Image (tube, rainbow, N blue to C red):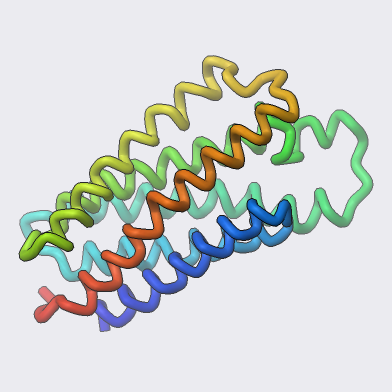
Length: 204
């Protein structure tokens, strides 16, 4: 059952990432927010599945990854659900929008979103230590998950330094390019994760 949940959750995460990438290209903000929720809904059980099938010696790393993935899901869930409901359906004044609107780079919710992805990056970093490398695909998965942890630093440091404060339309374009790069990076993680769960022969 653990490997099946892992396989299905990897597929859900992949659908979310691809859908998010396409939504960004088409300029469909609502679709981007919805698919971002799908990413979080697939990511948490995927991390839990890695931990479940991992060796007992690596349980601490697995539990840490689960905890960080849960924080990520809560933070981004609050941000994107607010965009799909309150921001989209309610007439808010400029002050409220300056705080709650994700599209305002440097806003409170934009920073919350980055903070959430910092926890996602930390989750992939720790879960990489549970991967048992039996072939080249497993090695690449471990490397990608481990390297993805580096994103945690930028996600925390950039908002603190005010990198996005006062950004203009060109800043939004740069943001889309950065997000598309992230999607291109994370898609192989989803595919390799599916293969990892599929090829796993034992559940510890």
